[in-house]
Image (cartoon, rainbow, N blue to C red; front, side):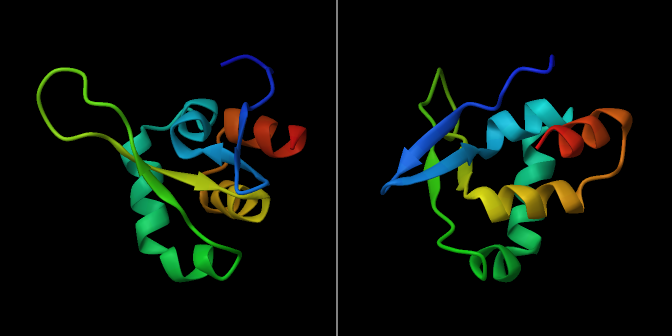
Length: 94
């Protein structure tokens, strides 16, 4: 992923980042990011409402569950991520 900006979504007048896009920028699989959100849900919720949504189904199976993280929650996710060169670059950029 290049140095492009993370696209934000507005949810109830608050800028949020889609956990699927954050996972792409971190170079991680989304299921690993959601596992961290689930494991540390109490801490994430302490930083604001933690909304989850479902993606659209393409074909068979369950729709993908994703979180819309506010700024503090996104920074917390970065702090939980392993310091690979890609993650360090994203931390510095934000």
